[in-house]
Image 1: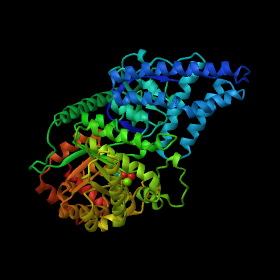
Image 2: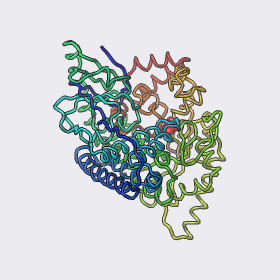
Image 3: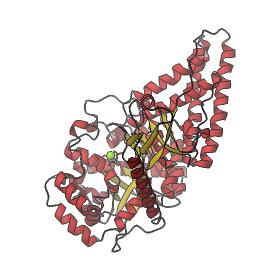
Image 4: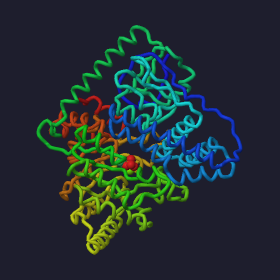
Length: 568
Ligand code: PEP
Ligand code: MG
């Protein structure tokens, strides 16, 4: 039998199932009279939870890394939030028992995160519920099962792989993970990838349809779980495992190499990040800089808007981790499918064509000033570059540059250090900016092509809408012509042209980017080495020959076929 889910972490695991259930945390609600004592109980449980989680974070730090440990310390930050604790205390003072106060407030936050409809903010709901379960276990004296004790070659099957569960995983012992929930950007997925643990997520009813001791093949590269495979399937899986290991070893050879085509055209290979700490993995994977830091995550993670100092610390941290390498930081890109609960944005009829990104920021100068000042201050600590999202006309870029000039004067008066020559570039991700590329190139210090949005806006097809998925493809000639033009105009003006959408790492499209003259590729940290390898397989001449063939075709399907045929 085969089950299908999300291919969240590549690799193939073969092993026997242990279904990891949450401990029974049922309790009876009570009305309390001694509210001071009840509050004490809650505080003691919170302290116990913090101590336990800190210890888990230490293990995680040792076994996996700092970034992953920070997910757990993030839980400590969450439960230490004075607002959250204050709300619980208020309930207890009204006679609510500690368990109810905890559950009600955590659920209130979880529902708020979920109601955003935004995948990334919705993941925060998992974190709040993880915190709730942890503190409730302390209140009820029922700590969860220790995953560290599971036998060799175990496949963990669980509703949701929470960061606190992951802390117990010993690398080399757990062969794979299957969950019922979680998407590509969930913490489960991030953690599984960081631990290089094959994982298939969002397999419906996995916890009920699979049972302890079942033999499984978890194919995290293709999102397939094979239950009770026969001999032939196991043999094939072992072969695929060996091929995967060989591919990894092959990629490891590209660490420390230059990013260059077979005939010596040098490109810059950067990584995309969502949090400053992600820069550590990017550097470990040998990225030559950061090509896109999506700052909206700093805003989406919190119940309040981050202050100038908080943002400054985050940007400075990324700059310091990158030790002088370029760090392209994109200013707040919210709206569309990205909601920031603390900003209370109004729902819109057509959010992707509405009050999004630079449009919102220019109308909220108070908010934008905080971010631009934080970026300028951090620019004293590394090669920080500012990138403006969703630009459609030259005026937007001019407005940002004017604001920056104004804040520089403020800093000169305040005696605060910054880089007066900081580069200011734009994301080219709208048809308007692609058409105006020549004019924008005269004003921008660099371009970065956002193929995710450029594809959607060019084809008028929402990337999240299944019904128009057939149109949402970067292989469409309209999108490719647009990208070609943007690269040519940028190169003509002598500015660096990069790409930070998913297509930058697409092995089939890379020869086209080489032919068009793309100067910088920004990909996920885990794709850096594979991209370096792909680039190394092509000469400019071969790439040009393929591109001239492809650019005469009129359909995405034909283009895909030709590129697939030519793939190396
Ligand atoms: C893009 O649109 O290609 C891009 C990189 O931005 P985001 O995916 O964050 O919209
Ligand atoms: Mg975009």
